[in-house]
Amino acid sequence: MSFFDWNSNFDIKVEQMNDEHKKLIALMNNVYVLNDKSSPRVEIIKSMDELKEYIKIHFANEEKYMSEVNYPKCETHKIIHKELLNSFEDHYKSYVNSAELLLPNSILMFFRDWLSAHISGIDKEYGSFANNENVN
Image (cartoon, rainbow, N blue to C red; front, side):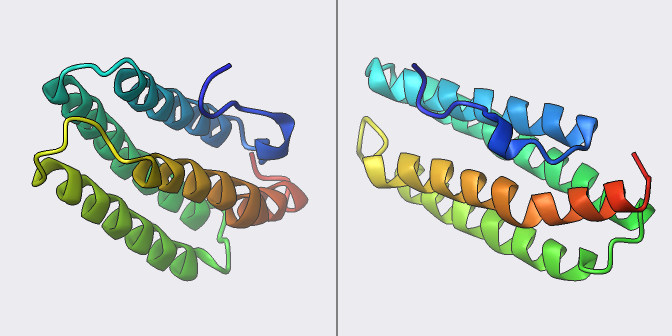
């Protein structure tokens, strides 16, 4: 079993976003596995860099999609994305600037908890909106 598994609770009924969420989960699991195996710090940082860059890509794609379907809470969602990315970057910098070889569990739990809550909460809202509007 991995650190974070995709399940039907995360299905927002928008295939592209589901696929991107699955990739985010895979990247997050890779960070976890490297950390769990006590991989070299440089490998953990490289994996976190990949995750960070994909988060940016995903958020941009998601915001574009919400705009295309005229989702009324798009601007609020963008603010939440910015806050999440800032939190991620704070945790990232904290680790990179430390002498720690491994990521603290608190950072790994933060990653998993925010993604889980984000997908099953506010992402489901735009998915429901898009599907009620017959936009896919």
